[in-house]
Image (cartoon, rainbow, N blue to C red; front, side, top):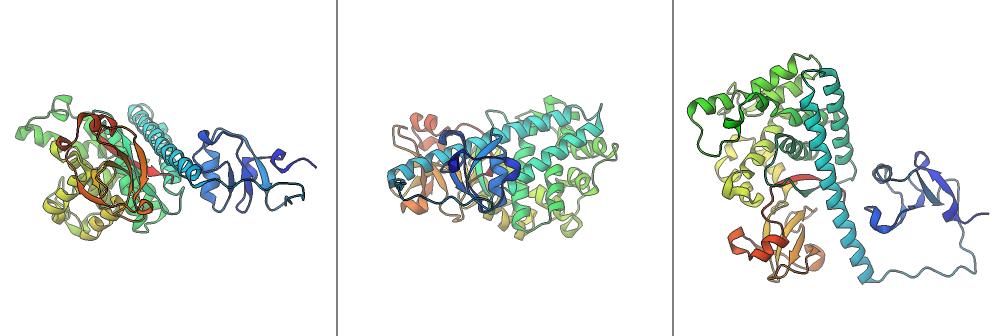
Length: 398
């Protein structure tokens, strides 16, 4: 009988309850170890995203591997080895989120580009992108948010993906249905589609807009709605999100000055996610924690209070991208949220910006003392922690 590690099975045969070994180096996959006990379907779906066509079956429904008397027990990993492998695992998870974000933005751009010539193809591509987002949201039992780097100048497509991720996380926390989450994702992807009809000189203007320019920019929801509606392919709730994503709970939004429950719940969720993202892009408010504080202080009545509380739950007290001072005096950048809203996963570095490492605050017995402004950092820390990049969000695979 061949050794257990020599028994290959295709990915289609994977089942919960099996123990398998990946035919990959530990640097080529996001799991902590090559040997995996499959406890949930999300693990199977993650394995299917790897560049493999088979795995080695160790034990499972049709095979029980017994240790022989002569087989020596495998050495247990040391705490140092576990810590090192955990660092690698988290870094790979963050990189995977970055790769998925870039692909999502590229797929979104492709959808926009062919809408006029091939509306049916656009809908199919958008539906595929939405299903990928749904798969990534459901990949773990409790999804968290990870920071992704959007570069120097965030595009409409990158913004759409980041808003979709935030809105889907809010919807998930509210136990919204699968159908509602899909509509939220698709509506968020297309919510700024109408900006294609706004001249770049207005859309990219950094100085104050004239009244005429501001009024023209406010027409983008109607532009986007008309572009999608004429295809007669998109669900009504998706069209509603595109048309009304700037409506506000107090009735001060546009284009129809809707108020409170007049606004579809899915649209309210996207409106909130879009508002936070837009605040985050404003000059001095680029820190996610400062942007969240601004939302609380100046725009709390613009949104349903329960939705704002859910956004805080999703982002944590210190959202990804926030620069902080730890209780041991070290400077760090928040990378991934955790079940403890006050203790996210951070990337820390010494004063010279050297020896960056990921830290789990709850496990390391550390806390966050305060949020730092960029002017408080040395040039070495700014470079090491990459504080100049625009912050966007994606689902974490942790």
